[in-house]
Length: 163
Length: 473
View 1 (tube, rainbow over the protein chains, first blue to last red):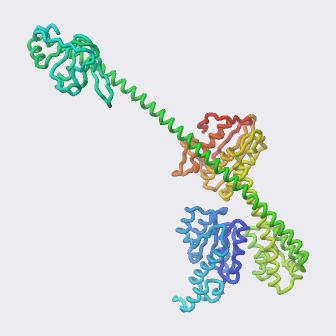
View 2: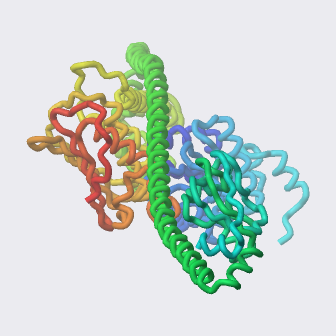
View 3: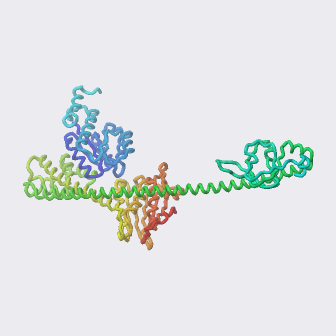
């Protein structure tokens, strides 16, 4: 099974730790990486790319030192290597204008407001990762127990993808 | 002329009218001229229901000459002011008389010419009068507009001040309310720690348990980049990237240390690692609770002192503290701003913190708007013989010279242009507050460096001075 790389970009250590711990239920299928600013996030993505790992999901704060979350996601969207990467903004501080830009220009997949509800966060991550594996993985079986099982099984039952 | 007319027209009848009688009305078709022999008449029109007098004619004048020349109806109402005697000569009679006597014609033309000359002079006078009246009217209109503008400004300031006062009270109230939960959270975290220490004594692996909690509690923050670097190093020696990651997260950077801790724990290595991780997480959660509630506490303290509106005689304010409170409340906009502080030792000022903090807020907000929340913000406080001087310097694009003189005006914003002064009323309010204390705000600006200098006298005069305007250099 390919482990799915999930990147959490958040400048406040306490918040980052909390988000990462809330992702514990996915431990068996994800490789969790952390970055405390956008620049470091790009470094993580490049390092993983070098190891042949693509980012499945980026959970990103907005207000951070350096490039802001929305601008980072827009930059990511412009890079074809991350076209399949699911993008989620998790923030308490993005204004309407930034959020609209994130949706329109970064093809944001989901927006989570802080303070987040851990169950909602888990649900969003589950849904986004399910979309990701449906789109990118040929062997879905390993993900059935951690992700959206019924959807994955349905797809498996429908037979192999038309290539 | 009258003699000539008398002889030619065989003494036309003299009409006598008492005072207040109408001779002819505006618009009446005139077929005669009237030669005033005695008394006084007024020529007037009714405009907007009001009687407007144009001429007041006395004996010797001839009425109806204009109507005669232009063959129009009467331009005016004509009413006697005193008992009046006149001769009414129909145009036809006049025509006949003029054809018979050349000397009468000459006299008549002279009279007509004189009358026209008089009218022409009067016209010029009127023209001049109209111009000067218009000027006066326009001056008065300008004065009124100015007064209205000033009134509106004063009203906006009052409304804004009232709004700020209300918000301040709300903020202070909320901040006060937050003190209790924060105190409880702080104490609860301390109690948990206390109990965990006691619990550790009762557990067989208590020492490791406590060590991990303390390690997490006192762990220095490490950047994500450094964490990855350490993970790489550890993974290279361990040849187990999952273990390396777990150790780095616990702040354990050597295998020897891990082996020392795990040796007394039961279970497999994976189980022992999970156990150590759990212990560490408890300490980490405690550290995060204490750190975050500390941050909330600082914010609450700043919010309370920031919004302090109550000021009693003898209270003083530390300007450096006020600025620091303000900066703390701007934290979310300062992530990409390098804040340089150079606080001088300032004597406390006998002023209320609230309004002063409003000044720092407005000017810092403007600076951040101009810099689009990225750049260098420099705060310097100094004191000289007369004043405490606060310089707030931003690295924004600067205020164009043509705007510099207007930035303290009400609602001056260049939102549509390159520079934004977000608050609109902000600088105007700040100016008013500082002027009230007998101080002043000066501004100098060039691209990359805009300096607002706020001077507050050591002995402020908290009187309601006329707001001084426009100190832009």
